[in-house]
Image 1 (cartoon, helix red, strand yellow):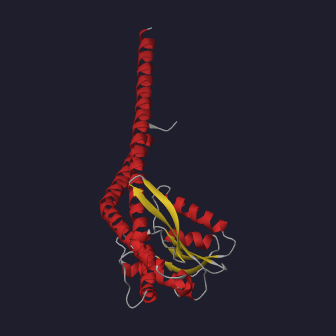
Image 2 (cartoon, helix red, strand yellow; image 1 turned 30 degrees about the vertical axis):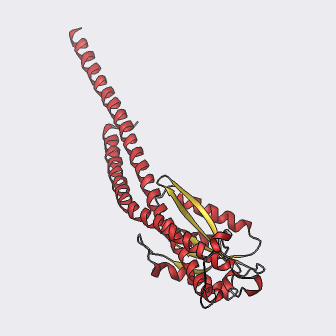
Length: 286
């Protein structure tokens, strides 16, 4: 049985831990609003660009399509852009993304080559012996297009040089503060979304559709990857805020339990001393 002093020391230690986790939760909460706004605003931009690509590609006949990024070919290897945080303390976020990536890799009948962003994804790739095309760390809490475009360029180059035959991206999609969904999407070959015939009316491309797509498709891939980084960043901040709040609540509950144990032990000690005094007095009087 630990002494009262040992329990009191442990209570102070847990209280200090609770202060740290509360501070981390407050920091994550302050970053979450900015990250959430960036992710939700960028979502509509990426979706509209996807509709623009679909409109342009719908006007191409199959024999007229000369776009490398939209061509399907036999798979000899698959590329995966793996987007993870640099840091932990995010609850189950990292494990969920890495588990989804592992399931995707396990389903492939050909080798998978990785562009890894974040220390967690890099460690996962090295630990599982995956071939890495490029590694990116230190993107920060305010990712810019200048920081994310090299990721897209490395995969576009790998696809154009036939180093990989398709490209997918794995990231945590921000749904709300308490829910982040591990997502894997195909990037290349670019798959146009369904567009109704009425949606195609009124578009005239100059000088021609292929020339427009040659500029638009690489930018579309860059935009999707940049938006995926924004989604992953918002997911990281929300997951960390929730995890640190839960850790603070658990620490406070532990302090309450330890305080109860310490009070019981102190009461037992006092009762035992009183009984010794009463017994001594009775012996003297007898």
